[in-house]
Length: 183
Image (cartoon, rainbow, N blue to C red; front, side, top):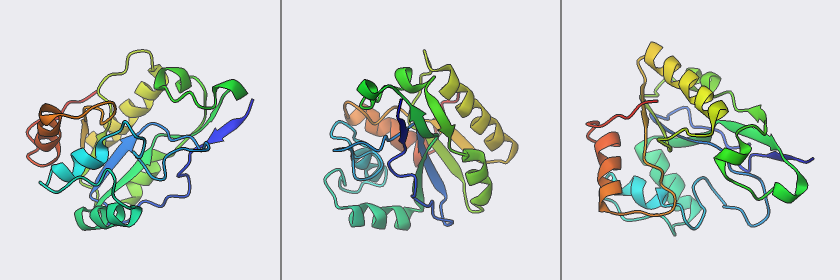
């Protein structure tokens, strides 16, 4: 069985990061996205700039996205570093499938502790049905954040669709800080 590493395993989170967006895993497979949340049916790059009433970066260049990240002090990480899956399942991206196939976790708490300007972490998932291992990782991160006065909230997934209601939920959580769904 092949070990599938994270596509952006060499991404270095900026030490200036104030907002860290956490996801689960981006496999390093042919024809995969060129950056975090870059799959065709993922709308993070529309929702996140929309929190500041900015135009969508969904079809923006990597340079445009990195400029936005630098200006708003936002960066990205995923909790899984690699998975071990059968050859015929290397394109299976479902969290419910990879939950028990994690070969190596990313040391998120070590990362968080190194980010001295970090104010908030947002995990792009609100449900944990059938993913007990990912759930345990997120609980540990949430507990660390509580102990270190770092805001930790769950966000409605940016995948599959976007609409005004989802955009408002993101604004309420990230900008207004009115909502904060927790594990």
